[in-house]
Length: 523
Figure 1 (spheres, one colour):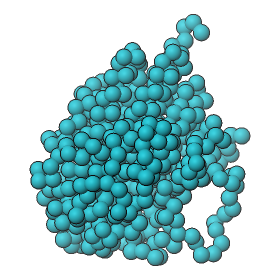
Figure 2 (figure 1 turned 120 degrees about the vertical axis):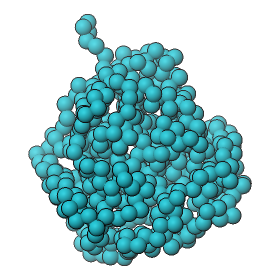
Figure 3 (figure 1 turned 180 degrees about the vertical axis):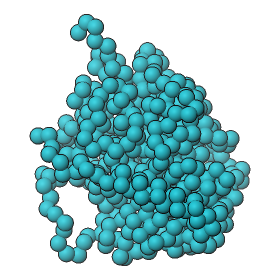
Figure 4 (figure 1 turned 90 degrees about the horizontal axis):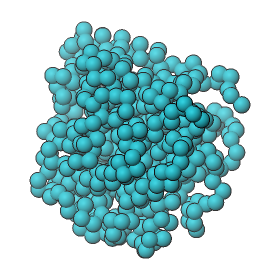
């Protein structure tokens, strides 16, 4: 229609388990991420961006909905996002966007069903969705081929191609894409086990090794290639598009393929100075985690200690290789946008779903460890409507949905709890989108009874401080400006600061109390 201006395209690039400082643009002098650095140079970099939950599914569901985990219901990896939950992607789809998810979804607990601990008794309610609604990410559905009876609306996505698993294990659409290009099933469809096929395996921890296949079959290649193909398919259309480009790496197992395994020598890796933190006065479960060697962790994915310095050096080197492979793929995608002539008409976001302790405080991986290693994430917003620069204004994963909706002129739906970050996109030094960030971390009641993990943990960040309190009454307080390594707990020494942060936490909890769930719904 004459006079109608096409809305900007949207490309959201998401990695899995990437620390905020695991990128060149965030000050890492060893990692080589030239393409992400270039994106950062023309976008707005958020130096103070945090998760809403440090676990995969809760935070990914928050990114989709703009709602806290206790509001959308996915408080842990043992439950799927409600099938009828509103998402910002559904709003885009209703307003004329072609929507695509390529790579890691993890909005359903298909790959994390081992997190489910059945309640011994009557459930809180009865299932009211059609049977199978929460099995769309189960790898078994792809055992004999790509399913043909796929829904045309997967949380708002009309086009979905899944890379379900991590490391050197290919499942979902990724598996059949790799097989169609000559991969051997015995090499790519493997169990998470110490004898999984591969070479150069660490003698300290089986989850660090070189996969037995060519790099062209790896999940990073799948996500990159299929994103490029999707962009090509949209090139002749006047319809705006949104792509959720989601890499499963650098989540463990740490298996960069081919040349990417050799990008860094473990001997050259700098280790965190706070890795020998005795955790005196820290929550009791952290000390327990610290004493668990990675090779003794539960179900290959549970939080643990880092083992020893040799293992940690190997883990960091392999992780850097995975990140650099992603950076290479991002560069190809950005080049394609330039070649299509749409780079300047596309909003590009880069972030991760959570971080990794990577040895800090003697801890490894993620989950129930409320230090900045797991809680802080990289965040870039490159928008045609925004200035380039950096901001230390507070930002949260929950802010992604309202920010994108505002940038494209679409109204928010009921229940969005995030804050639009647009005030921070004009590079005004005193701009702010929020006064505090709340971080939730819960497990089911039965899990809390069977493990040392607190049932509930809450962290609030404000005024340069980070205060954490859990349902066992344990607490920590850090001044992040004076103590960025979080080695000096002020909870018992700075009573005024503690009281002020407890007030902040109270305000944050009141603010997060959901008034939308159960309200009259759209039919």
